[in-house]
Length: 317
Image (cartoon, rainbow, N blue to C red; front, side, top):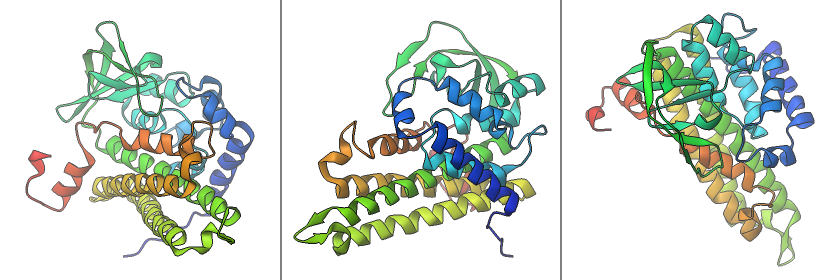
């Protein structure tokens, strides 16, 4: 049975509205200004648009609308714990879920003691032993420097309420990361292709050389596949199919591989200017590498995928 993965008019409107919001409020200069800190004002504005409530009983849309929004957010490399927030709204009780959806509570989601966004978080979700727990920091937090400049921390977490195994939340988390990363990679390919069209070498534009055009085409193909998998996962999560978690895990792994390979290729094609802090694409690849290097949750994507296909050796991963 095949799926029609094209967005309908309502979902396309979501993507276009968020893309316009990003053009107006989250351009490249704004993204660079938020590096190393939490974008509080932007986060509240995004919540006011209803994005953080997607996939919840109160929200106006489900996982497909979430992917539509994330594709636009990924293209703009919008900062903040997006995937963690969507995970949280799947498992938190009503009052806390509403606070996250309104942008009032920042989520730190991870396997203690390393907790992303911990220095600015209001809600701590600890994943351990195949369960999700509402947590509370037990001691002072040790700030951790990260590749992408996000504020992380190392802190012991006292486990509180058991919120269940978070099966749907894990799938939503992987799907969200996949959609965002694939879109960020597509953005990077587009920027690099424009550079290749306008930069000349030996009397020709760089894009005319096969050594430039073919690697970019390979990246575009891989990213298109990852984006398709993210959309397919969204449909399966909404339909609660048996393979929804495996589908989301496959999407995440595909997007991580494609986006990281794209970052490597595009930096090569940009040359030295591509790796300068003030350069045209470093803030994009930095965000890609930050999200691609997220520490795996207790229920890792690879383990889920291998278990789904009954591949031996899952326990060793």
